[in-house]
Each structure stands twice: as C-alpha cells, then as structure tokens.
Length: 248
Ligand code: 13P
Image (cartoon, rainbow, N blue to C red; front, side, top):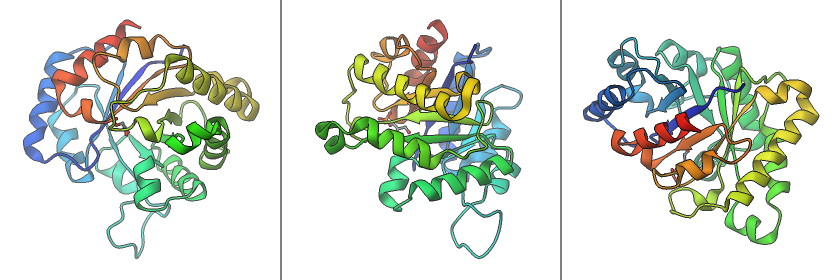
C-alpha cells in the first residue's frame, strides 16, 4: 500500500510571521495518518523544522543545484537542504522550467544530487494549455517523466507530481477522466521502466487543488496525494484537503 502524501508548495511566499500557520496546521492535525510535507522558501526551512518540534510534518526545499558545492552564486545544494533539516525537495516545477529554462536533463541531474543527499525528489511534470489542446499531453508527460527521473529512482526515493501548467494558480482543473488518464499513463510508464517497483511510486496531482475539489480528485485511481500551492499557505485551507486525503 502506498502511503498518501499531502504536500504544500509555498513557492516564493512566507516569512517568519507565517510560521504561525504551521503551528495552526499542527494543532489541526496533531496525529496525521498520512504523510504531510511543506516546502517553504529556503529561508524558512530551518526555522520550520525547529518550530514543528517532534511533529511528523516533513519540510522540504523547492529546488536544488546538481552539484554539492562550488561557485554557484545564489544556488543551494541538496546536502545544504538536508543539513538545514529538509527531508524532500521539489524538482522541475513548471515555474522553474519556465522562469529558469530548466530542461529534463537538468532536472534529472538535480534529482540524482537529491538522491545522493538522501532527499526524495518530488519530480514535477505537466503539459501546457497548447499541448493539451493539440492532444499531445501524454507525449509531453512521457518525455518529461523519462527525461527527468533518474534510472536509480525508486518508489522510496522519488515522488512524481503531475501538474498541468494550465491548472496551476488558475482555478482550472482537468476532468477526473483526464487526471485518471495521465496518472494511469505515468504508472504504466513507471512499470515499463522500473518493473514491480512502479507500484511503490507515489503520484501526486497538482494544480488548483482546493477544499472543494479535493475529495473527488483523491477518489481517482493512482492519485496518491496532492501537491498544493495557494491552498497550502493557510491551515484553514490545507487542513480540509488533508482530511479529504486521509478519508480517501
Ligand atoms: P496551485 O495549487 O496554487 O494551483 O499551485 C499548484 C502548484 O504549482 C504546486 O506546486
């Protein structure tokens, strides 16, 4: 059985004042029965780890460099994230692919660095609105999955996140049939490549997940959780999503 995972991506939002939301999240979810992960800006990782005390909430980064150290001004390496207390790292988010031109090969190198540092990567992929309209969604996702996931990945050391670019921050969500099609496709591609271990990979859906649509999305086959942006910033929004996933 795959353990469900509710992951929050705070993106470039949050300062120390927002740690109050983590206190609220912990108060609302004192003994979670699913895995919880929040990926705040790197500036907050250590403080968040410290402030959550012994609660099982995991804290992750939003990106890492492919190298462990060196002359790369402004970048952060996977061992640095681990040393700050992070236990996961989001990789290849569409905003990184768009804003920083990250390629599948670069995402794969980062995922390898994360594996080497003991951090499971949450490897993101998803089609643009144009690709969806052109009917090439599975081609795009298949290429990103093959190109971004290291050969050494396992279900224990990597999480896949399907995030249609057009659904991120827009309030638009694919139909449940569309989500089922892509998640089933990802599972089948993982099986082709990794054999029986494909069943151990968690596949998250991301893109405008809200309290009002979470339960129906979590009922879709091969949806093992969510990667949530805007609705992860406030416990009042994220807790009902956690409750829906826990009940699924
Ligand atoms: P929203 O939930 O704000 O649409 O963002 C999704 C996302 O990009 C999570 O990584």
